[in-house]
Image 1 (cartoon, one colour):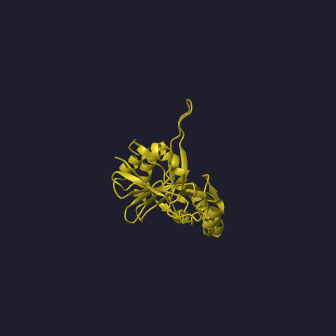
Image 2 (cartoon, one colour; image 1 turned 45 degrees about the vertical axis):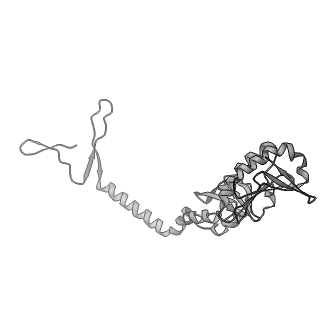
Length: 275
């Protein structure tokens, strides 16, 4: 800081015009020295800024292309079981070549999720030209009717190929009954599995009647009411009266208050009463 003495002997702390003062810390015993940044410095900065602006304007397209490069690479971070990379590339073909900042992430996500095996997708951009995908596939726990599959949330989805899913249990019922049928399947399967019966089919008719399909193609007609109680009653006598004949039995009807009927594959019908 420069000190000026006025006529009355007082010290004036005013800075000279056109100068900006800042203090610099002293080193050792050296006194502080003022550093002055004058108008010439600001003028130089202004000139540099103008020059950079002129250069940017002349090369606007080049700079824009460099920052907003076309998307030309897709990277999938998850391992795919049912979706192929070629299917993903086909779905994304319309977005390849779009600018990095122009590509619509929401649109990409929606388009990919139209694939029946894709449950959801996370999409992010990695500069300068990459799309990174995190794909979550559907988990099929059962077949639904002849054309669909059920996921763990009882949602139906319909892939083009169902043949690889033939080992899954077959569930069916009226539209909107997926949750009821899936819950019933879980309960009945827990009852039947301990005695060696594999629940392969479960059908709910339009009249709300239940039918079960188990090992060896045997059908069990349960009816509309007391479904779990009837199945438990059947299990109680399964070991002693049915297990050894399961290969020749076509159908068992549990819709009796005191027993059930058995239809063999030779079309013989016999009745067994439980009292």
